[in-house]
Image 1: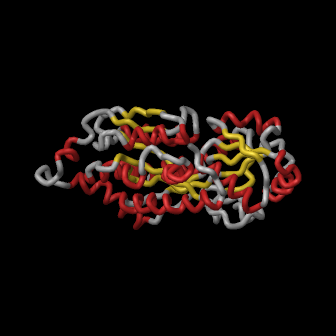
Image 2: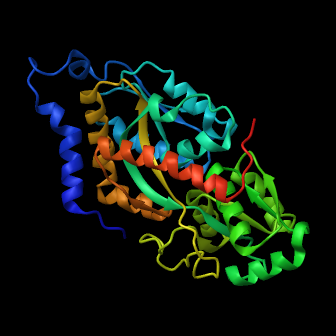
Image 3: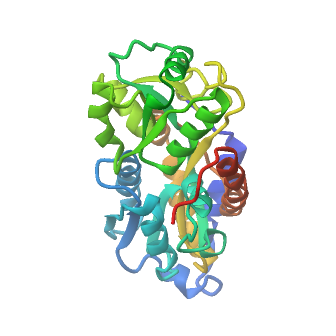
Length: 331
């Protein structure tokens, strides 16, 4: 089970809950009355997806902290997450619309699309970070390839007749980096949802998939997929038995994603701090750590300022990833 630096947790928890100690004469009106209506948790993928599982877990746990308010999970899939991102960015900045999504995907979309709908660096604010996770290279359990080395040798032999499944930006970049480093010519098959790729992985129409850990590990538990490697530079604390890409003969890849609670820019800081307190409390709880570990994530608690700095850093880093992977931005 992943461990959290207790000093970091205390620092973030104080940042998220300190507003509650302010007197009525010093706290802004928005913070005093927040939340004063139902809260919307926006998910960028359809119900049943890996991201949806995370969003609904936090919605359920945080509901009891909101003074009886309802939390509505609003699924807005499409355009690689841009539909949801734009919706949140243009929502009223009052804390009642919260984007529970991967900051890494938001960052990536600034470079994988020619005209992103919003400037994420200016339009969004991280309220709380949730976890760190790595996408995974997967195959069907009946595949003869038990290691990444074996899969790589097979893909080289098939050349451009090989193919692979992706459904999210991070998976697409991971697969392109894998191809670039290993010298592969496999062809991408893009699916609306990761679940849609299962039949092609089973039939061999797709030789491998590059999928998110929530989906991948859930399918492993059901006997539908096998994980060959994770995209982090070091083994995950939550999944120490899974080898890295470097251990599989593909060095230089360190593609770590991270979930966050994100609000529109301009949301009052006391409201941001209160939202941070909610999420940090769930993430730092034994139940929260167990949930995140189960789906391949290591708990990741920061302050809102640290989370925003991570977002800005990732926006810059993903420009390099996209160039290295030679990905042509979509129109």
